[in-house]
Image (tube, rainbow, N blue to C red; front, side, top):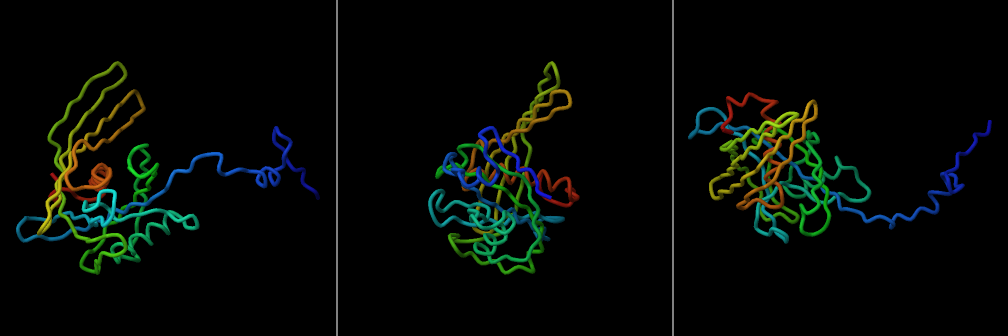
Length: 233
């Protein structure tokens, strides 16, 4: 039985449309993946457990010498998941770990090179079982203890709901490095609709917009683990 081929308004079948399609008609943004690799450790100097994040030191422009999450560009012939695993292995020597997609970040000017859309991944691992080694375009790779403190909050009532503005201070530290950032979140609630925006207000040593991605990841972690055991606040 012959199927009737559908045609569009120009009188083209799907085969004809695809054969004539011009992919250069639209500008193409670049796509990257960024990985948040967390671990929880026992520290002699602090009671309880400490949350740490793996960061790499950038070896090239932009943000050369700054610290960032492991990540990189997605190749045309690989999936996002494949790119995440490849980049993590290339930059940190970590492989065979479970990661889940966290969020996709698409602010127009988030990367000074070009229009870049990034999908972030998150994983909670046992750092004692990993052999961390910086390679590819990373000059170094280290675990940083994280502190995320809410130090300012303002709630404003509106006709249909409220606006909640918060400022978080993020601190990152290890034996030889101390980094920090301030992230502003604005949550707008109108009836049943909720919208939250994040902005990096200040960044000392952290590349790109990674500070706000990290803040969001920590918020997600708070919903997954017992934060009473972690030094986040």
